[in-house]
Length: 166
Length: 393
Image (cartoon, rainbow over all chains, first blue to last red; front, top):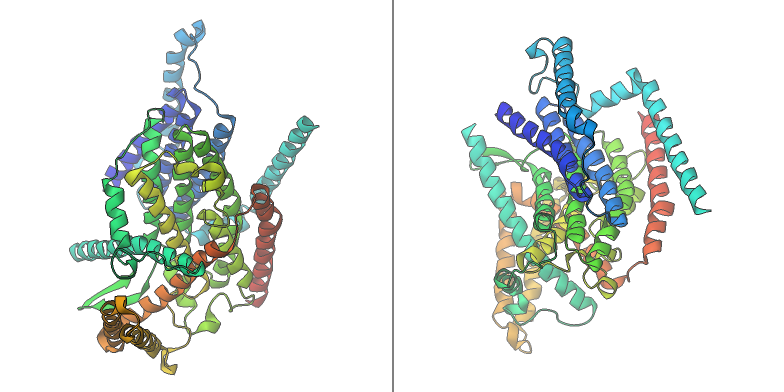
């Protein structure tokens, strides 16, 4: 059952991810991206990390992607025109892609040589309590640093937007 | 395993049937409440007191011509009502209606599934429900629909923040994310409910939650996505027949979900206002007897010729209900259900009352209100609650 669900949602995630790039209309790409986020959440759930799955749906699929779609709708962006591909893309594109995928597969093999390192429901640190403890004890400094980084980004965005308004 | 499957299927069937009937009749109740606020009788022609009006409406919507305009974006246009409906109905599966009970020798919880992240699940599903409205607005390829969709997405993102913060503070007090445990922590009486209990009573969080819930469900006074005098009908202007009905039903289903959440988070869920040994188990029976007597009195009044048969029948139904509440074998699961339904129904009535009373906000007021008042207030409430909870323990 777990394997079947994993295969279904892994395939959905990959197909949606490819679709994000292939689609010419921004809204269709955004919909595919929501599909990727949703299937990733199901994969987290299969591993036993229910809090991360819920956070994935609430934050990424529910909040960030709504903003993306909102901006696309507000600008009323139309479909992109497909231009002729440059010579380099036409000849080097496919080999480069194959090489990148090969490298990724090689590194995954090297880093996680045993197949039993990940299995369904095997992740026990997924409860809200565990995540809270990890965030506020072990990883307190990175957590606070990230929040300040986000604050800086927000202030920067406002400064940039105000400069344009004046 | 097999018995688990059978029990789950039976429970799903019961909850689904009850939910859909409630959805249909909630609309009748709303029309009646609005009508009485405006001093008119409301639906009256189809069946006694218009009681068969929902059936007539469903038949009308099912048999209407289902047309798809030629200029729409087909896949998203079809996906939108489906998405809105599914997400609205999905969140009911983690709502507990009562404690663990024994019916005919089978022990089961009055809840479809008890997730240990129940609150987060409801938040996640409702945040996905926004896409139904947004995609409907965009795919319709109509400027009114697009404006409605834009307004809706901006409004829902903005009000989700105070909503989540208002949910977080009772969770701090109760120290759990599971909805059934949340109710267990509030057991005992009205003084243990999260609105009144704890180091810091969550009255402010309750009010903020209710205001944000009105905005999240696109209800008056925040119904700008479908403001009919400026946007015709907003995001669902190009939809007809069952596709329109699914948007309509999803709005009511969201209302029910939000009311259930308010009941569970703040009002103690299925817990009676005071313990059973002080007589709270006789309250439902007394209410039904009183309602039956009122119906009987009006039915026997010779001046109300139209209600000569209908009201005595209603009275008889009420008396049977009162009897059921006094039987020990049905009492176990009827009493929690009664208190849950009473609290949820009270909040639903508030939704209708506000719709009959308040005018619509202006758009800049709507945005200014949440960012300048509601969000800081929710933040402050969460801070104070957090400090007091930490200080208390």
